[in-house]
Length: 282
Image (cartoon, rainbow, N blue to C red):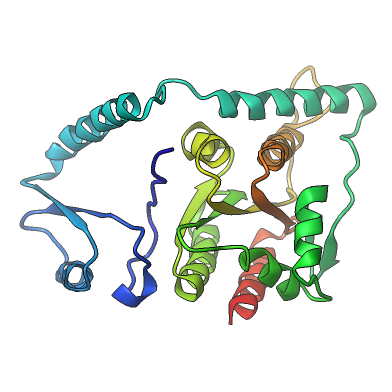
């Protein structure tokens, strides 16, 4: 139950959207963007619902934080959802702890069998998702597997990129290119979260909310690791365990999920992935 929040998705023309959105336009009086005003006006003229919130100055943003936080609590009560609980986030934490315990005991995580590997990108999937993708056609190229994965998007679904990579301008730009390709080709909402931080916000909705998401988890190697005092592993292993633990819980919930590992040269890997996604959706 509930709604999926979509933030930082580039604003597109009306034809890029389906009929499952509500747009919230928070506009600063006296310092707005004419280009954005015109884009929002076109959305309204096309029949899209737009909520307009005018702020007299930037200091009123605090008021908006409170308004939306209060709305979440009230909506949770109406929907019969406890907005202060996150059981599916805890499930991901528990799986991560299991993986790090195995790593501590054996010196290595449990082995994984890749679904596909080419051009520096390796794909992983749980048995259920692997069978679903094989039934959709599979293929001999990275783009073929991504095409089969995103073909599972239907009306009212959303696509989410779960990126366990450094949050910087270069990586964000590459991931925005991917989500724009998905939105424009399939007319679905897209979400982008940088792990592990998104686990404590939208991560609950992804695993415990409506089963309307199609997920592409993106992981990477690290050129430099930072050791953890008193442990036989470093923070790279912890990050990998968090990503893998979250993916396993998504799989347990029968979410449509695929993981793409891009190696230590993240910029090059994301460029390959973006090109493959564009080819898959062409």
